[in-house]
Amino acid sequence: MSPISAKRAGAMLAGVSLVLALPQTAARAEVQEVSISKGYGILYLPLIVMEDQKLLEKQAEKAGLGSIKVKWVLLDGGNVINDAMMAGTLSFAGTGAPGFVTLWSKARGIPSVEVIGISALSSTSLYLNSNNPDIKSLADFKSNEKIALPGIKTSLSAVVLQMMAAKQFGRENFAKLDPFTVSLPHPEGLVALTSGRTEVTAHFTSPPFSYLELNDPKIHRVANSVDVIGNVTLDVVYAPKKFVDANPKTSEAMLAALDEANEFIAKNKDEAAEIFVRSSKTKVSKEEVLKILADPDTQFSTTPNKVMNFVDFMRLAGTIKVAPAKWSEMFIAKLAGRDGS
Picture 1 (cartoon, rainbow, N blue to C red):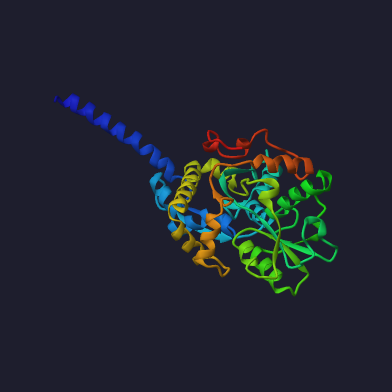
Picture 2: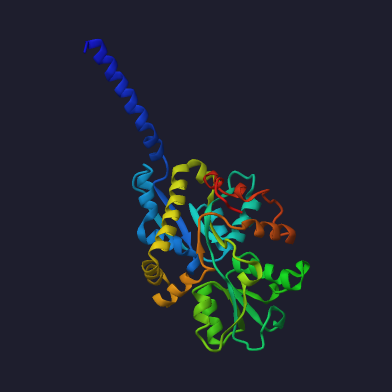
């Protein structure tokens, strides 16, 4: 090869090397540390598995982001999580779909606080359990009865209870049970209900708390959410839109990590149950968790399912003023091609 040809070849190789290096350089410009909130209960199992198996760290490395630090925070109740997100202390959050819809609507078009969904998270049946044998339906609550749930009016349990009340008493009476509700994290609600020493006579909750309460012969189930409103996505993962815009590869790695977590749960139910037991703040056995995972109502998917049911209800109830025309408007573009609703 002539000196001129060799020189040209060297220049071409240098150019190719530069082009190949550009994506990695751009990726490494993204954040090196993220904070993620998770909550109590089986609905958060994909996030719990992600933390245990370090799946976001794995997917970040795979995406060329290098080593990132992940900080996990335990929060319960849509209003608490939304406050933390608005304060800028969270990169990603797992929360009830109604809490996300509320914040998406309020912050829509305000760049500093706008949020966007990363994925769906989970669905299951919520049980309304009671220690009062006289309470056999939603119509049986009296003025001295109290229903524990994580956050009044805005939490997942609160909005689902409103939807159930609307079905029974008519849409105009969706808030009929609101005066009976008191705010308690699920573990505290379980203790209050089973102790029988407080004003709490009912608890609207998710697994494992719903299952554990029914182990007590004094507790009975009044209603099951799936029987009334069907099986819908109850929890989602979301983030500040400005964070996602600035860190697109990190956000896609988060989605990939959640997909991997769901695959892990499907293929390794025993290990997933063990991970949940280790992480749980409530005493629960592996056998009890496996029973929950075997329930067909308990499902884990990153594709939203009937999230628009919440949007339609909350818009008619006046809870939100701005609503999307379709579900995909609320989530990252990566999900748009999926068969969501």
